[in-house]
Length: 376
Ligand code: SAH
Image 1 (tube, rainbow, N blue to C red):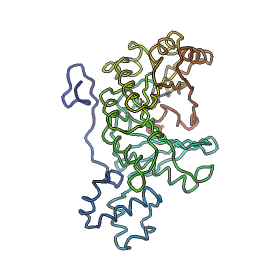
Image 2 (cartoon, protein in one colour):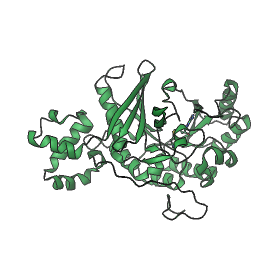
Image 3 (cartoon, rainbow, N blue to C red):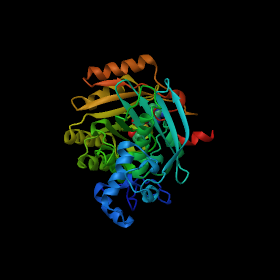
Image 4 (cartoon, protein in one colour):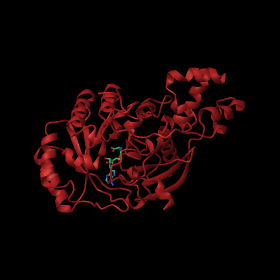
């Protein structure tokens, strides 16, 4: 298997155009711990200064340099400008479920727009993050897919979504008392494995302990992918025991070619083989995402076909009632078809849950994130 994305497109290989753009400002959250010393030297500061700033940024969640009172007053501003430049500005904030589901629309340094969604449950706080502005995967049922790819996010732009959510939780902005993000799902805008290096960097920053990172447990982090097989294998080798979610949506190549166009490059059998290797290496149960679309992929025979493919593996199926996107010809399955689908999977011994559709009223539910909606 060649490198993906290919530098030279091979015949018949899918390529995704990536417009050339200015890079987001370098930020502390872009730096691995072993890269910090070089930056300290460049700034003419002792290495422990970076550690102090990192403690404020990741640990105390203090972003105003005036409050960095353990640092010399005359270097605070300069350190803030060079290490924690503003990466994103909130453009709009929408809440529902009594304020426990909150979607934030962010404007990035170059005007690109992305969204993140915070969901507070009694026992956890899950943040759904974006890894790209837009997406190049073109899945016809997904709102983000309609607009195409604007650009990849940097590591820090991904991490900052988590830190910003932690700041909001620490301020008590979310009903339920102060708290912290406990789970991160890469189910916002973008295909995380098409922005592999920045995403893996962000996984390290999220799971490294304070002050090297946010200090999340890798078990609480889920990377969701359309199934870029070589990158799934890279992720398995990266030694980060995050949960892998595969957006399958169909058990057969004929239908999956239509629903998840990258399937023409890596078909169902190859994607699942990579997923099983991932499960074997990480001992983490793989999540199979399946959006139930009325009369498209919700037939009982497809449930059986799916059950046969998955039975006996370290797997869990997440059925997602389709959130119809504006102008879509598709809609969610009938209740009885959904129930039959669940029963057929269970009959194969495959664990299955139907995902709640939190955030629907604020277009914050699965697959509805499309920042361009701002201009509607
Ligand atoms: N690119 C990644 C992350 C996308 S969003 C991926 O494809 O996995 C996370 C999940 O929401 C994916 O499983 C995606 O297929 C699903 N999704 C997208 N649009 C949807 C919609 N309109 N209704 C329900 N689920 C949707």
